[in-house]
Image (tube, rainbow, N blue to C red; front, side):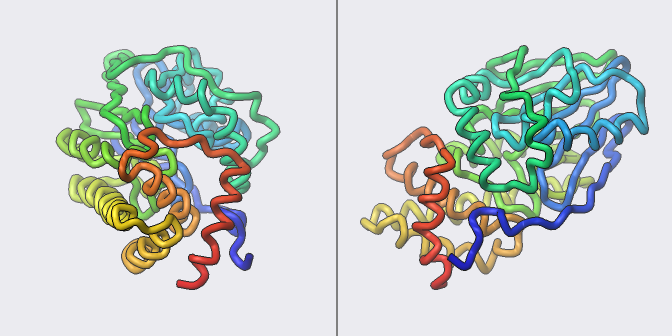
Length: 322
């Protein structure tokens, strides 16, 4: 095939930014690579999403140490994907937080996801040999948990299904700053291979109703105004709706996955094709849409390295003929 598998062709290092959102609140971003968030309280530091490996996490730690010597006691996993969680051991945190659904997904499919993601996007797993194994939360909650870092109130909330079954946001109610994980993207294509398309828009409605003034998406630059926050939420919603409605209509008409893929890819490409990792994500995204449409697979099937490559190559001829 002329097109390299997933993101194997993406080898260019990205420019990293460490952006101050408010006093003690920072966004670690890298031109569409996975973001991390940093919260500095009165007595400790919290990191939201850890980067993919302990080696990569060292750069986050270096930037934290430029502004504070407080211990990094808290790590939040916004969801279970390896690229978000496998750097956790570098922080030596006392508390690793995740929703119950995220914990359950690590048990069910964490190892397969680890192997799948490393195979898809090798650049994002620099120093993968430094990963000691799966990351396990030691504080698990159902819907919401409040952490006080001295006087600073931090709310960790599971708003509903979306990017995965267990997505968690981190909310600073006083500052109205949100770290959304991959529930919201900005200038980057949502990955929906493990998603719940039937539920995600309603979860975004609940997120939007909180009226964030600043927001750190899962990928993309830190958003510094309410208008940018709304733009990112709406852009994510539009992509999801455009894609899922197209696939649902195609499947209801009796079309095959390849036929739905060809139609939906052609629909999405003009509007979203410039977004980061578009061609990486859409084969996985549309395959999940096709599974979910009509209720055939209400829960996502587990992606393995073998399933990844079989699906990818089966759809490449369709992509190349667009």
